[in-house]
Image (cartoon, rainbow over the protein chains, first blue to last red):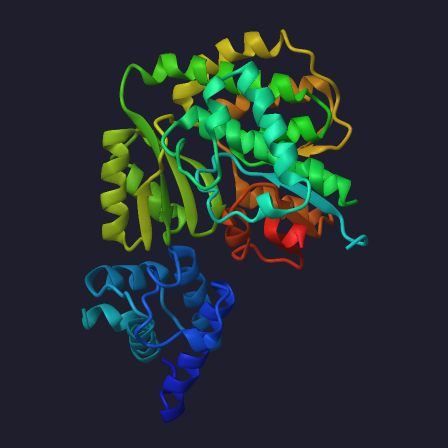
Length: 101
Length: 300
């Protein structure tokens, strides 16, 4: 289980913002926590999958993708801010995240 | 760019052209509309009504195939005019027809006739029920196999990456497979906008009828080799091509294995010869040191 520090949220936020700016070819200044991933950025499931893989490697997370998928079905994510919140829970709880759902 | 070994990759069904910037590229639009006019005279006069800004043919399976073919042939022509030449070719599913034109195995006209004839033969089968295809992202192959144990008439017909699969079968069973996949934790599971169960055993009979047409055509050896998505072999000969054309309708393919094979053969630059970036996006899940360029990037 990854160590959560005060800095973790900032790290996660930076990765998420940079990732969508790069993937969706928009300036990072155009992204906020309220940005809708699908409507505003034309995001898709492959981007979501890729981002999860980035975090799995960065924080050496022990969690199966389908566990995240099951959590996401019950707790759907629409905005960048919600995605950051979910990512923080994944880092904190890894494969026990479903116990929160 | 000249140090790379380049593959032109031709996608199968493309439905959305409205954000495609190729039409702004010098020479592309003129050549595309010239080919479109020719195609409308050969196979379907309504094709001449196509415009990238409208979505006229969004739900017309045959016309979307024609257009992807015309686009692929046109874009590869423009790339070559700019000195970007392929060392290998690869057709994703029904993208094979444009790849074969590019490789000099068939003419543009015969490519159109192959698409039409295959679709006609398939239509006799699809009239007998409701069929389709589905895409599932976020599960592993074993998870999907477990789901399909209770749905024996649905097949995994393509693996795009370790977490992305395409299924074919009858519509009702596919819809059930989608429900089960979502319950299992798939990020994305939905029906594709086609009514044909491509690459499934259901098309074996029409494929054999299609073979009769294939063997009447003037088909040449490839000047540029084609990598098979069915068995990942490198094809050159007329006989290889005829077999591939027929089997491509009813045999499973494996895009993931095909791209890995191409990387192992030393190919380092892939150019997606279609509008959009679906194959480029998928490539992010395939390890290796290579470039995968969308049309916008290749034409810059």
